[in-house]
Image (cartoon, one colour):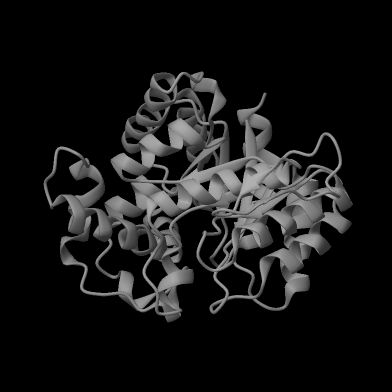
Amino acid sequence: MDFGLVLQTDPPASGVVELMKRAERAGFTHGWTFDSAVLWQEPFVIYSRILAETERLVVGPMVTNPGTRTWEVTASTFATLNDMYGNRTVCGIGRGDSAMRVAGRAPNTLARISGAMKVIRALGRGEEADLGGTVVRFPWVREGAELPVWMAAYGPKALKMTGEEADGFILQLADPFLTQYMVKAVRDAAVAAGRSASDVRICVAAPAYVTDDDSPEALAHAREQCRWFGGMVGNHVADLVAKYGAHSSMVPDELTEYIKAREGYDYAHHGRSGNPDTAFVPDEIVDRFCLIGPVSAQVEKVRALRELGVDQFAVYAMHDAKEAVIDAYGRDVIPAVNA
C-alpha cells in the first residue's frame, strides 16, 4: 500500500520541502499539497524544489482545478517537471472549492473538469489535444512521458465520471462505510464504461493524529486538532444537499446528516486546526472521517481501508504534530501495514 503526505504550502516553502524529505525517508511514496492561489503559496514552484531534493517521491496537487489556470498551462507545468525529474507527478483535480470561491467565482462544473482532464492528460503525454477548435501538441515532450489524472469526488455524478474517465479516485475522508460505498460506485462505473475496475487507483486522504495512548485527554486533543477536516468536507456536502436534498437516495445520510448545524464558513481559517467555523462537527464525525488514536488504532483502520480496495492512504498533516505523525507512520504504521 502506498502512503502520501498532504500539506498546505504555508511559508516558508523550505519548511514544506523539509517535511516532504522527511516523509520520503520515512517510507512515504507521494507528496501532495493544497492548490489555492490566494490562501497559500504557489505549489508548482515548490514541487520543483521537492523533486530536486528527493529521489522517488511523486508529487501533485490535492487538488488543482480547471478554472484558475488554463488547461495547456497546467499540462505544460506538469510535463516540464516530468521532463526535469522523470515521471514523478500526478494531477489531482476537482471543482476548486477554496481556490474558486475565495477569488469570487463558483466551483467548476463536471463538464469542465471532464474536458480539462482529457486535455491535460493528452498534452502531458505528448499527444494532441483540442483546445476548443485549435489542436495543439507539445513538441518537446519526450517519448514515454506519463501524466495520470486523479479526480476528487463525493456526489453520484462525480463518482460516475471518475470511474469512466479518471486514472485515480481521491476520496477525502476515511469513513469505512462511505469508502466502501464510493469505491464501489467508482469501480462499477469503470466496468460499465468498458474499463477494468483496477484501471482506477483509489486514494483515501484524511488527517491522522497519533496519540501515545487512548486516554480521554489524548483523544480529545487529537479531535480538536483534526475537527477542521469535517468543516472542509462539509463545504462539498453542503453543495450536495443543495443539489439533491437533505435525505436523497442519491447521497447517503451518513455523509450529509452531520451538516444540519452548519451555519457558514470563512475560508480565512480553511484547513487549519482551531477553525471556529467547524464547531458544528461532532466527535463522531472526527472519529469516522479521520484516524485518531495510538499506533494500533491507526494500523487497524488503514488495514480496513486497504481491504476495501484503497491503494493509497494520504495523511493530512495540518495540526501541531506534523513531524511526529510522519515519524510514527514511518517507524510503526507503514511497516505494520505492508508487512
